[in-house]
Length: 247
Image (cartoon, rainbow, N blue to C red; front, side, top):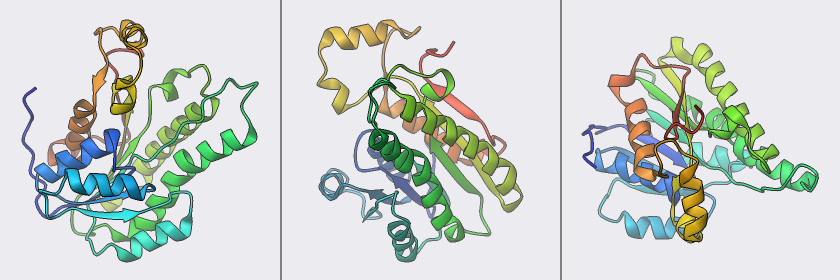
């Protein structure tokens, strides 16, 4: 697949949950486009692996971050020399169970990471954005925020909350030079899904109008577009990258 060429030279980017999966692909694409990228992730092991995979890019920095811990978010902000231009709130977890079987801990952990975590990180880094340049907040939502999903009361609730926060920030922060948008991925092929049985993957693909799962590169491409100057008039929207799943 041919890639649209963007230049993000001298742009500072922070990506939470950026050490693997979709986040790692987003980080790679921003690095290829010349950005100064900080990957912030909870897993030190994943960060080490990411540094090895992305060792060709000297502008890469990594930071251990617990998005549920405001002190951890404050430390990230204090250590960030900036200036910051693009924040990608990608960190997230799942604790899937039917509502009847879901524990309070299952619910609370997902809320604290996927919803409160987006608030914590954005609040901590807001003052780090370059006041003289365009500023982008890109939040990772999900198609389940738009139509729900069996066994994901907690996850769907957080992603719907992320959509609402995204739209609210679009209204509040636009006058300060920000745009705030969200991406709602559908079924995306990752290393985790590659370990699933073929018949399960085929069943997932059959639910998608285009007949296949998405690629992490397709999410990353959307993220780079929203961060670019070409998307300067897109604000407060949710872009579904799902092959038509929510039609």
